[in-house]
Length: 261
Image (cartoon, rainbow, N blue to C red; front, side, top):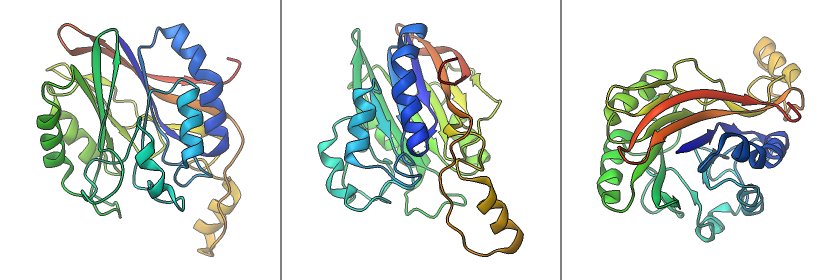
């Protein structure tokens, strides 16, 4: 079986390329599951119910979120009605929304959840390692495999999570930094790992934002509005193959695609 994890969707350019390419990618690669991080889908900060439904209708099976989950006003009142959207699992239990989603294809039940890292991150979150333990125990017997997204700044924390969950998750895939890494590997016990799946959006940019104002901020420190860029739009993510019988990953590779390519 095959799953595609789409790296952080940024703004309208990211949303549009997902809607344009996901149906084609599903057909071309024979994808069974498509999971996408969309925490930056609304003008680069957060998501709305309308955007979530649009992405799901385009062929995304599960939407994950990160530290910008509550950036859009009122989304806390919408997330409960979005059955295939999950907020980070290690946020306080009082937060609205689901801490995981389970989807099924050809009898295989895939569970998906996200944990936030705590190094260099401002969000209030519990320990991602102990949180993963608790949720994996909760999911035991309810699914056939688990995709764990580690939404974190520090590569060391992401790598540690990969080794910690090796053999217990089908895949441990990183997000948040918007820069794809070159360390895709199937770990010894059968878990696919990648530090960061990159960004889906405008790559002629600084992390999806217009270059000039970001450069100006670095040069003089003055505040500026960082608009979403528009050039060189790409969909990036991790393509994972796994054996449904052994519940082990067999291959992982970085995927990058442009519209019309």
